[in-house]
Length: 115
Image (tube, rainbow, N blue to C red; front, side):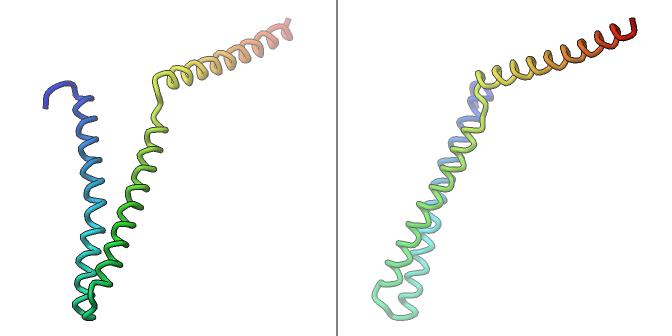
């Protein structure tokens, strides 16, 4: 592919997500159609099982879609933005400086006690 690697990675991740959504929607519905048709033939009913299992497949598909969207939402929230990264870095520097200041005070008090 052309362009920079980060852009290509993002495009491929989005394509994978779209494929995953499609598969997660189709498989349960298709399975419901197959199972419902089989049970209708086996029990010689007129489409009752087909309707029930297609509805279950659709419900399952939307549940899968909801779970996937919640996972992706959490992943997105957990990514650090550049401003958050800088803020966390500044806080860690402040803490290190405070620790160093405490150590310096301790050693200065120790030297004053020796005099």
